[in-house]
Length: 226
Ligand code: CA
Image (cartoon, rainbow, N blue to C red; front, side, top):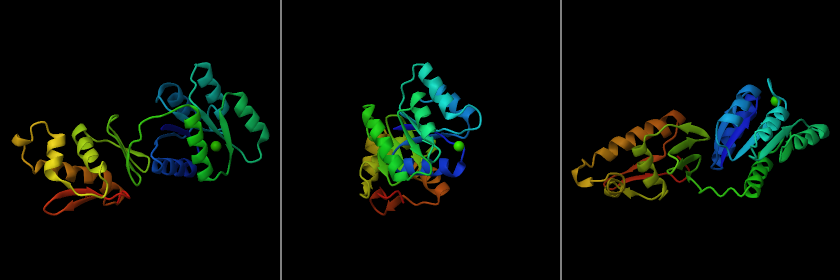
């Protein structure tokens, strides 16, 4: 799912980004109410919004109410203060679908997110996944640990070839056949060029090594994301 997280505590926002990213979701974060409102109303579209109640700028209640006033029915999971019964009631009154009191367990949050997604009937095709590396070839989007990585169309196609068979060696020729329209006229070393540029984008900046060379054959991707 494509999830917007509006949370001003950077530690919480970052762990949600990483945790939800590792579950295969796309995560966008906003660190205050103004940005949150801007993204909630104009960004996305999102499948779900995780909304902190107390925020600098417009608070979670206001953002949620404004979304509903715009006819936006995206499921909202509100994060409230501990023992904040009044917060919970207010959140639901302002159009939130569910709430979770802070501090929360990530496992519980992830389960609530899945439940809200199911209730909303979101059946987006599962993206390709290798550990915290997620690729949506249709949408041409790639993320590592919830952090978006910009790839060209050709890079996406090469990576998809490898991620469709995680852990297995994919011959260079097969990548050529699948990604290039006229492989005969293409220098097979071109695959190497693309794998090397992929390594610079999805591995090196994250201190990872997911794209392995299988000598004499081709390449394989580590199923755990390296
Ligand atoms: Ca807060």
